[in-house]
Image (cartoon, rainbow, N blue to C red):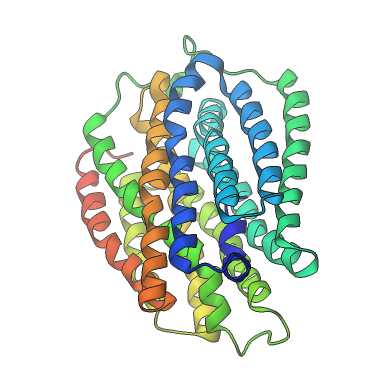
Length: 369
């Protein structure tokens, strides 16, 4: 749902006679509330349980995506996107907390969840581009509204067969005597920078592919070509999710996190320097490397937080990761209009140098986990 808009930005740019700076600002607003809403969700999860929150998330996204599909101006479109981001923000603190309390092998559980997420990320650009090409961009959001309606029904039926684990009897291997606050501060700082990078490259990758792969799939429109290649990159994230889940069970999480941050940097820089087949190849490698991050990071939070505060821990993380990191879309839009889209990616690589230093310091802040 969140990746449909970046895929259709070129279409919206023409339809609403606006620029990439404005569209980037809209992405930033939607992504900011996507992170911001995770904060109260962390508290509400403790009071109402993950199942109730998942149902609210689905009802909200059904309504907001239908509203987007029927918007006739840029302001109403923006309002719809803000509310879709707000309701979508409920998912991660609730869903990840539920998984962290049910999974016997935490990193593996997070990796399986992440693989599902990567499939969804890959479908987003394809739905956006395919619906736009065949019918209209509005139909892409109607499709998502219908999908969420089906998910709501499935969740409602399935909720009879599972229950939220109570805070009085968490699994023994998940109990933490206290939250490691010093380590979390360093991790959260890394999370802001990684979230900035993720928002930046997912927002502008479709536009970058559209302009830098002109000699490939020449019979396809720019929107369709950008959507196809972006989906392939996000699909490669499944390999990264699997690697992260496997490595998280075998290597110290903090050390593995350092290497993941390190290897993101050269691929991001190179994306702004190449085109055509080299661009596709390096972007696929970036997808693999970057998505190692998610199962490792989610497992790290679970192991650094007390079970009672885990929902809040995930909520803070997603606010920092997506809320604070949302600024990449606005800054990227300015760079795209002032210079060119290609310059966004080296900028994102440079941003990760502080994250590299912080992740190195983090290694010394925790016991080997």
